[in-house]
Length: 380
Image (cartoon, rainbow, N blue to C red; front, side, top):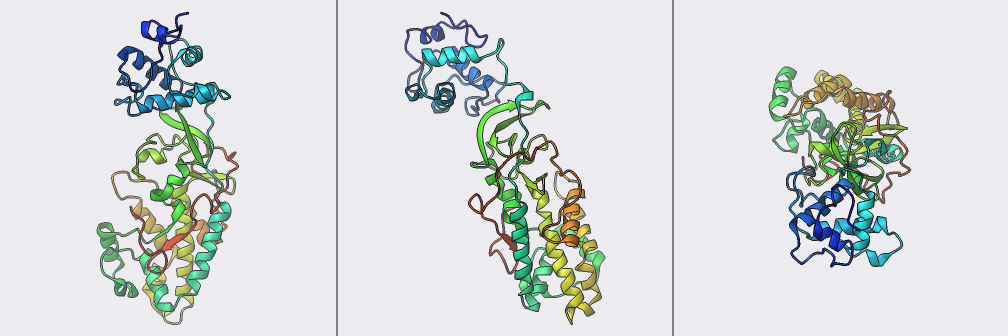
């Protein structure tokens, strides 16, 4: 019986492969239109073929039945025939084409947006508190000179010079602000798994297992799967960790749960800053030498840290709002490592229904605070 769906019907070679004819497979040149229809059917069913669609999933496919198309067919076969391993051969034959044809809606299309769950990433509440409490212990054990260097690294963050330059204090804060606009160095601190450049763990198993491309209610296409941080990036196959798609606000990509709220993990990272600034502030008020230096009291303060965040967020081609980073900095400065800002989080559409916790088995929970902790800097 000829194939019936709008995508697969009307091609003699496909009808032949769906009945008694040879399957369509890797390694043999075949009917270009037949292969293109198979590729379009796979995308319509939610499978990703980025190399086969050079102009994107809405463009014209290349018509090459290569490894990528065969892998997508195999993925389809695993789901369509879960108990029949013999069907998992990556070939478009009678059973596979008939099953595919029956699953395609009239006119093709994609899975309705209403079927897409928005789920936050794993719960990091305990892990961040553990890291930040350890940070407090490490800092308090440092000698005075190293404390000054560490505090100056995060609160007088100017590029250039060596560690010896980190032990003094500027005399003109207005001049310092101008230097920061030109030579700011924001690479001196991070809780590593919360840093955007190290966030791939939130887009890979076991946190996220890619399944298919779906169209979000906004019309944006994103990779979906699960169990957590789904939908994932709208630029999923981009290996640049700083791609805007990895933090697309229409998705739950690069998100984590903290105390029952869903946040972009890079926003939570500013809780690291708040803990650090509080340590420096307390040091400035109690150290017998530093407490006599008025400028140190101004620099080692929440007010100065807030101004720095506003400055950081004004950098670059994509200026950002500073409200949420400041809220995290203020929360941990005032309340300690287990404090969280009030409010719903900055990814409220992502439900905290993921049962995954961010254990040390999933990623390495540690921090960087130059120059005493971390060795090298994380790449920006």
